[in-house]
Amino acid sequence: MRKFETLLLLSPELSAEHRETLVSALTGVIEREGGVVVEVDNWGMRDLAYPVRKQMRGFYIRLEYQAEAALVAELERNIRISDGIFKFITVKLADAAAGEEA
Image 1 (cartoon, rainbow, N blue to C red):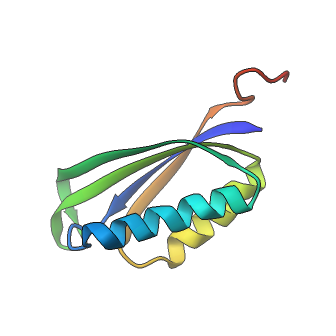
Image 2: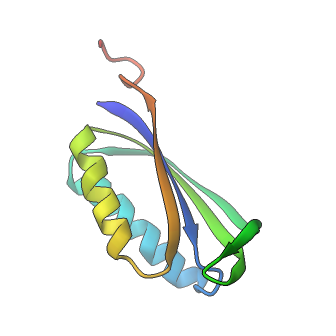
């Protein structure tokens, strides 16, 4: 399994409850597809460098997880069809998770 990180930019208009529901749904996709969620890092509300969908602020959440490459495609598909997510980026952190042989 490889280690990945996905950074999400959420709408500032989402309530805290809706954000939690959205994040738990995405972590559920990771776990359902055989991945392991390492960390969910809540960065909070930040100012943006340029307007995104006419908004100058956004809520950032970072997901760090271990998974196979096919899981990333499924996770990104779910992100694209979710309301309230403005942008996202996924980065491969390591080819093999710590403690595994390559």
